[in-house]
Amino acid sequence: MPKSKKDKKISLTKTSKKGVILKQRIIEDVRNCVAKYDRIFIILVQNMRNNIMQNVRTEWKDSRFIFGRNKVIRMALENSSEAEIAEGLQQLSKALKGQTCLLFTNRSKKEVLKWVAEYEELDYARSGFIPSESIVIPEGPMPQFSHSIEPHLRQLGMPTTLQKGVVTLLKRYKVCKKGQPLTPEQAKLLKLLEKQLTSFKLIPVGIYSKKHGFTEITQGAKENIECDMDAEISNNT
Image (cartoon, rainbow, N blue to C red; front, top):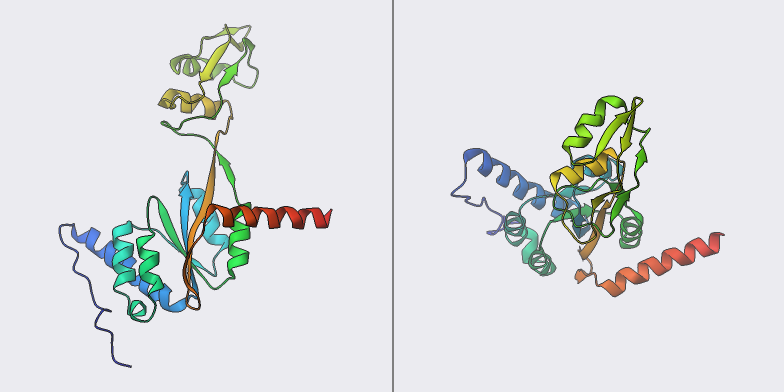
C-alpha cells in the first residue's frame, strides 16, 4: 500500500528544540494509537491531579491516555493516514475543547462509560477553587493538632492559642465561604483540617470507533448510563 501523502512530518516552528521534540513525539504517539486501537474517547478531566492520573493509567495499562495541547492533537488526527478513510477522526478533532485527553482502547463502549461514571477520587481543593459549601469551625480545643503547629495556624489566619499545651480556637472561625474562591491560606487550612471539597473525575465527551465513526456523548446519554448502573445495583440487592 503506497504511503499516504498526509502521513508526513509536521513542521513545528516558533518553539524551543525541546518543545518541538515533545510535540513531534505526541503527534507520532497519537498516529500509532489511531492505528492500534479500535476506539478513541474524548475525556474531560475535572480537577486534574497527576498522582491520581498515574493510578488511572496503571489500572488501564491495556489502553493509552494521551495528553497534549488540543492544537497539537488536532495536527496528529487531521494529518493521520487514517483520516483519509475515516471522516469521524476529523469530527473528533473538532470536538477537542478545554482540558481534555484522549483515551485509546479496545475495551467496549459500555465498559468504558460505566467505569468512568463510577470513578471519582476526593481531593483537597487548591487556591482559586470555588467551594459549594461554607466551612465553619467552632471555638474550643483542637486536639487533632500538636502544639508545634499552633504558630502556623495563626499565620494562616486562625485565631488560636495554646491553653495547657492544647491548641485552642478562641472564637468561631469561618475557614471559607460558599461561592467565594479560596485563597492560598484557606486552601492550606482546609488540608490541615482534612476537609476534601473537590474530586477528580473523568467526564466522557465523545467517542470515535472505526466501525461507527464519531458520536458525541450527550448529557442524556450520561444519565442513561447512571440509570443502568442503578438498575444493576437494585438487581444485586
